[in-house]
Length: 285
Image (cartoon, rainbow, N blue to C red; front, side, top):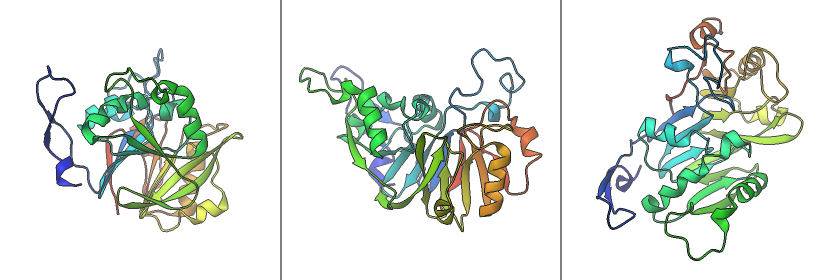
């Protein structure tokens, strides 16, 4: 990461605030799984099951998201509702761009907390996404795109869209290959390959032409909701079969519900397959 992004003192947003030091952990060369939980997170509100009441922090799962330390900055994958908590936990103060997998609420509804980035970056945050994601963001965050001229600085996030398709593209000094996947009968979503690492959440089908793009991986992060089948997500058994087919060096399962206890499930998984957990750091190769 460029030196100016690692450690600095910022001008405050208002003249009356005290100058403050930017806290930003250098994560260059790593992917951090910020959240590994399903749409309701774990613990589930109102649930008294053993996993939801577990004292093991690896059973505490915020909504799915990841951040990559790339040559030219930090790339956030999805703005989960828990984004603020996730970034504070990892002491990451800078998001230079965001890349979206799809438009569901648990993957976009932390976006307003990007408001601070305009002070740190000196301009808007680029959002790399497909057209349906942009449409949903523009509807859900219409106030961020209004023509109002009387807003104070920082009132709304400053954003700029960068349209992507299934063609490879570059962002922050790294090349990405989109992986088309199916998320139930109604939604097409994207996974992403960067180098020999791939991030593929929220899917229950990976077409053959997409499987071809996932050959020869060092690490695969893959959706595995629960032991039972589901209409829009891979079950753990289905995810294991995908991992066996692709044979990456290591597979981590994500987007998990409270039906998967961390230690007990890992004890039953094949070699080189594990449940992920919030805060897991994966080298980018």
